[in-house]
Image (cartoon, rainbow, N blue to C red; front, side, top):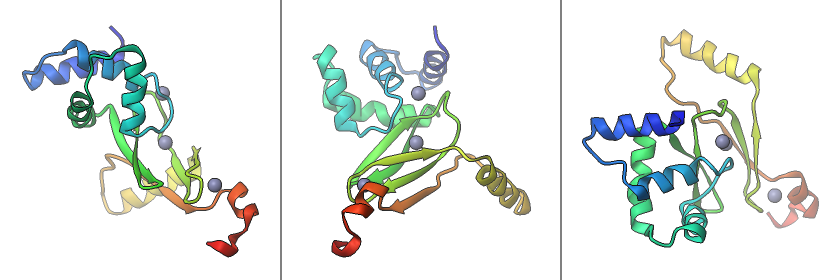
Length: 148
Ligand SMILES: [Zn+2]
Ligand SMILES: [Zn+2]
Ligand SMILES: [Zn+2]
């Protein structure tokens, strides 16, 4: 069993819930998407291989994955909530284009050090880091910021 399955089965066990086949399919698909995705995309991806997993089942599984610490709702782009799996990825910041929806990820040690420094100052224990910059990507800036 891989690490994320182990984390999820332990979590479900504590909640006295079963690791059903649907939950396994959802979990594996979430960990096959190494990018930011919305639930509709997740549903479409699952549907191509398994037509027995309903949209409702997916919607119910998402909060469980979040509570288990495996998934997070990381940002909103073009009015859609985007999720990404946490496990196995370094914390990073997002640059989100408001026009085309492009998401750029950046891992920056200086920013991380700065955030840690701030947390230490307030004796604050960081659980999750969520830093996003919103604006326009280089392509969209070229098209002309006049119509923004
Ligand atoms: Zn990944
Ligand atoms: Zn753009
Ligand atoms: Zn990300």
